[in-house]
Image 1 (cartoon, rainbow over the protein chains, first blue to last red):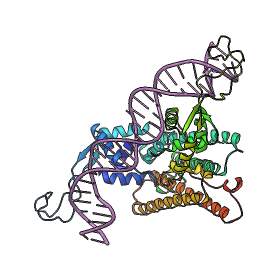
Image 2: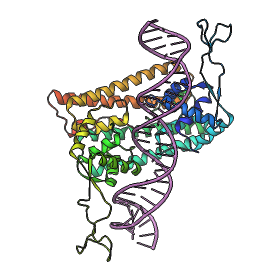
Image 3: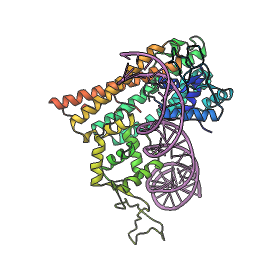
Image 4: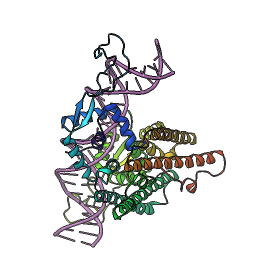
Amino acid sequence: MSTSSLELAVLGLLKEGPMHGYELKKRLSFTLGPLYAVSYGSLYPCLGRLRQSSLVQERVGEPKPRRRRKAADKTADGMTGRVVPRRRKVYEITTSGESFFFEQLELGAVYDTDRFQTRFAFFRYMPKEMRLRLLEHRKAYLEEKLGEFKESLRATQERMDAYSRSLIDHGVETTEQDIRWLEGLIDQERAAATGRTPPSDTSVRRRRSPGR
Amino acid sequence: MSTSSLELAVLGLLKEGPMHGYELKKRLSFTLGPLYAVSYGSLYPCLGRLRQSSLVQERVGEPKPRRRRKAADKTADGMTGRVVPRRRKVYEITTSGESFFFEQLELGAVYDTDRFQTRFAFFRYMPKEMRLRLLEHRKAYLEEKLGEFKESLRATQERMDAYSRSLIDHGVETTEQDIRWLEGLIDQERAAATGRTPPSDTSVRRRRSPGR
DNA sequence: GTTAGCATGTAAGGAGTTACATGATTTT
DNA sequence: AAAATCATGTAACTCCTTACATGCTAAC
């Protein structure tokens, strides 16, 4: 049974606390970067699958009551003056969900940008050596691709129009920027492993990073 | 009937000359950048669809004969000492394929990186105003996304671990780099439109460009 | 003579999207 | 009272991938 990036990301977010679907969607876009977006048509079925596998649980609990309500409302909860909004399901990760999350996290996904980034977003749950291994494998992969590409560029250079040329130049530069980001992360990881400068808030921040 | 990026790219490549599937796959990866790859399981069915819609034609023509053959070979073509390789289909774009290509090219695809890049790779087939319009819409879209994102970043800043922070920082930087690339392209397009400096080989090259 | 590359395809399935359907609550 | 946003879901469809199946040719 393999896991999509979405399922992993959902489990990862739920590890930080119970949430309902609507909130989850917003947090997903935010956690995975400016261009990442999930649709409800993808998210809700995903939550359904996770629930069926008992990796998450559904709750009606603590649904953040609204202030006022109309009189004779069918969803009234008695005489408190509060309304419990109907159909608001809060999801919570289960114990087996947590262990499943860690299992999947270990399956290094280096050849796919989405999968790599999803793992990276939850790096804090990995041991140092695992982080280093992943970063270095990803870097090696990008360097290999880049090598192949520059090679085949040299062969076809002349007969190419300016626009497609610009497109691939930009692709190459973006990939190089990704590699530099990874190098910075590797350096910091090593520095943190060897002695001083633990991976504090400021040490990992402010370095270049990969795009979708 | 809407067209996938793949279909459009195949038509665009075939406009430059007939090709068979295997070659097409290599050229696709090359034209669309280092990280773009298509599988045969995607490409051959795509060619089948295009043929069924009469947008491309299949030919057995000019199959680049190989040098020698074994005696008593079942694919022998008589007594020429040459072998015509079996099962090698050359595809050619049709006239209706060409007009369809132009129709689809006009449907600006600004909200999707893949679709935008596919259009961009065939910019030379567009009139100047269309190019400018596309570039500016794409830029505006990325700027809007970036604005929303930085906004929501300010709100959640503190309680975020260093790794996911680094991830989104990198995403932001990559997007900003994409915007700069677009700005460079817009400038050059305008310069070419106003007077001097036509879009020659050297003027569009050497500017920053968007990543997958 | 075996490995690598050329060449074409199919079947099953994965992972998502859009459009639709519904309705409550909050803000303007 | 209208518009925005919160909230959940389904059905149909798109587009692609992996794994399999097949066989030829070139190079080592």
